[in-house]
Image (tube, rainbow, N blue to C red; front, side, top):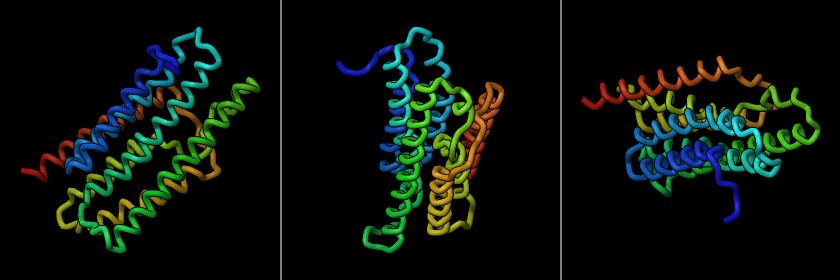
Length: 221
């Protein structure tokens, strides 16, 4: 079989499987499960690079394969899945309505923004590896797509606020997707987190997961 099969890609593959399960749950009317799948994929993404770097004897092709497979997985996990969750969380979009068409356009822009951002990231990684320049690999250009794993679970809690109409929630989700999409392709730099920063993000993700669970539980009594 083509590809490389070792422990360095397991986290990436499990993350992808989690997100595919999340998409299926979303279209089956269980968006809350999808939100936790998104958070879990974000958790795994925090570790996949660190796991890969523990294998010191990776060939150049193995390293490049890892970069490509990670980005392809990220597009599904943090691009497609949030767009599907937003649609499933407010099932009030008749297929012939203007709002449905608008959501389809915004979701496409969001996923396209993620695709462009990941492609640009891959080019930068390849160039940095070829030139042995480590300075460029210390910063991100544009907002990392993995931040979606924190942004959209927080937004999902808005749906549980009493008195928020479904149409308003959909509008908020669409606005967030547009803003995030343009941040994906924005030409600004964000310093990559240190180990301490990565653990802080993990802690934040756990807090968000707990908050989502509490809010969901309180609103379903």
